[in-house]
Amino acid sequence: MMKKVYLILAIAVMISGAVAPAVHAMPEPYVQEAEVKTVELKVNGHQLNITNHDDEAKPVVIYALTGQVVKQFDAPHGTTAVDLGAGYYIVKIEKLSQRIVIR
Picture 1 (tube, rainbow, N blue to C red):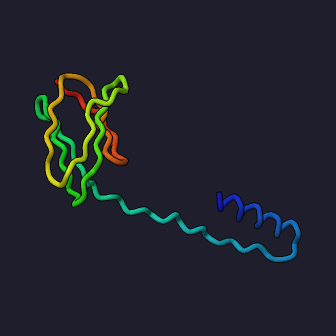
Picture 2 (tube, helix red, strand yellow):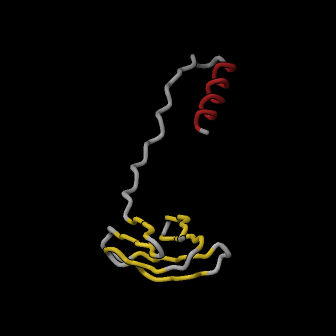
Picture 3 (tube, one colour):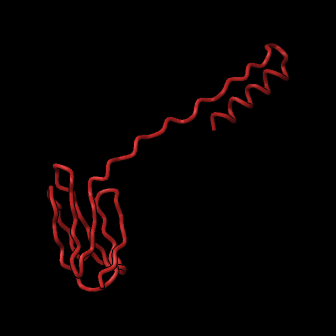
């Protein structure tokens, strides 16, 4: 967006002839640091293991594919085991949302 604004301004200055156009390289957008993955999900048989590497508890919501909330709890620091029946689920932990299959 900013490149377009500068381009329009440069063309306007060139057309008016008031000032010689100055071409400046636009700085690249800052690279955002990748967030450290603080939560891991692993399926082991009919069990979902949620490992929270953060010191504070994370809210967990497990949905069936129908949208029904199957389980809702706070996962403390460490590993929490959740028993689930066979099926497809969506696990949401803060910004993380992942599909899992229990067979």
